[in-house]
Length: 545
Image (cartoon, rainbow, N blue to C red; front, side):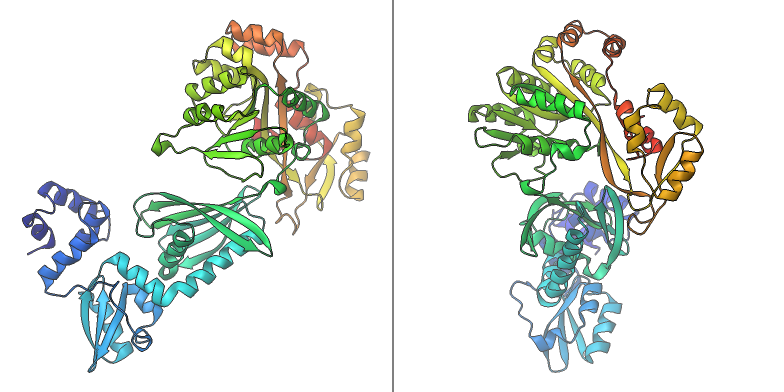
């Protein structure tokens, strides 16, 4: 009798569940029992007990098994991992082997060749076998492998470590300067051991493979403490893991590190020093919004202020700040978290994201209560951000009364200082500089004298505007860029803008108002920094347009 029919006969699954599993089996190489377990229709224990009845092969509880060192040495670790099996006992020329598939003739032959004994197969659940293999064979290997992975990431100043499952194993990549760099692939036979080790030290459920999980790892590296946020997600090739470095407050950027112009930095600081109102950091994904928020907290973090953050997730731990992590699955949302912390008498509230109208309304009302609220929001520029708040359905009077300042920003690659060289600007670059009155500014001319002497002299003789590019070198991996700088526009909300908000005027009227007041856009700031020789026009246009 087939396993599916046996399970139906005993009332463990229905005919419909079996048919669904058979359909899923057409797109995989898995056995029907394995699919039934993965889909949660039966448990691992129910499967092996059904197989015991079907095949007449006994089941072993691995928690009660205690193989000796001599018995374990009968099978090499690689063979045990390959076939998911482990030798339990040897006696009178026979070796009892716990297996996930006792009908696997290749596995049985490998054991016979290695041990010279007759194999007596037994059944065990996959999770019990995998944990037993880790316990008896692979613990030291997985510990060393994981330690090497994390240590390399810290040496390279990586912000994230990615372990991506594919058919070959775990592909290890590091996010360095916002770019992912592949370092190596962990063999398939060590994949489960490494992931299990990660789950163990980050306090996750090692037996749960079908649902995403989150945890934390603490690491001591050359007498410095580091924390990682760990996230796992199941895929068809196994579980993916991302370890994100949680930097401590002493490692934070300062506002001066974001390449603000003096005018933009002063406008932001003035808004923060008011100690009330809503300050928003706007931009797309990977524009440095979170890092900017932490820099603001670092700037404002003094003993006389009670600072509370509501985050999803907490990316960096800050001494002196009460950090609250939301959990949507438990109903602990951004709005709920913000309403709750209002009872904590904060001076400053940071909300890591304003994704919807409810969060936006709570943030504006908190700002109206006399507190300073800083938050991030997805927005193209400052005017678009105002429009987005209105489109969320937040009352115009709340926005106009609470909004103090908006910083729109992007990150653009910084030209590598070691291989920087001057060259004449292209016609298109010159036209852009001219359109933004950036051709003849003396301070820009002085700042753009970057690069080696020969290239600067040659460019100067051409009588064209000088720009700077990276030639490519070992330091920047021949990319011409090393690190990032910020480009910004900073909008302080004045009475004229409040009136436009109250009347819900179209975007064009906002733009006309700002043009009359000689407002400097994010494109202007980016082109200005390209003119200084800090980045290139090409990268500015890619980031801003």
